[in-house]
Image 1 (cartoon, rainbow, N blue to C red):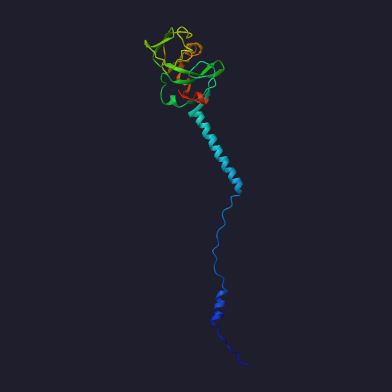
Image 2: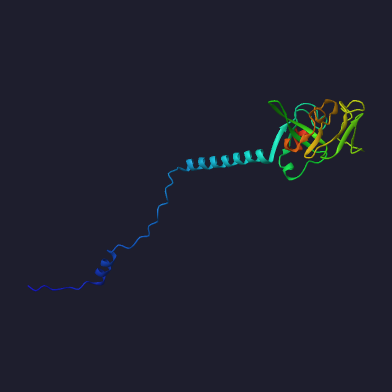
Length: 211
């Protein structure tokens, strides 16, 4: 018996072609971080809070601080309980100016506290006060910030004998002259003891004002 060879038909050829696997595009899996979405969100918040705290510490240390006024030595410009912002960079950029409201360190023995006063006389100037009248280098000092409720003629506390302010020092006083512990007792204040310039009362709201 003779074997007969039959060539493949077109249909067979197509079947043969279909049987060959076609290449398939395989998408790579995203890298695994090991953290769930919730953990990643928590980590992000920790970073944000940490950065915010760092910025706040740097600002408070080098740029800005707030102080609460205690006592009545600055009445009626400042009242007890007023909160003020203090620019700690001011006197790194320029010298104090007359009329500035400043926070300063008072060191007595081992104790230290912060005081808030007004700059009255500058380095090299001669200051004197008699009968509540202050003269700088012999010229009458105008002080519109004084409240006659607290400062009246003959009621200003200790007078000031003619005193020349040394270099890199200022002479400070409270606006409530009879009730202020200031340069009349402390002497002139070195620049290095100035924390900074108080520039605004921000609380309580009714007392808000630029200084």
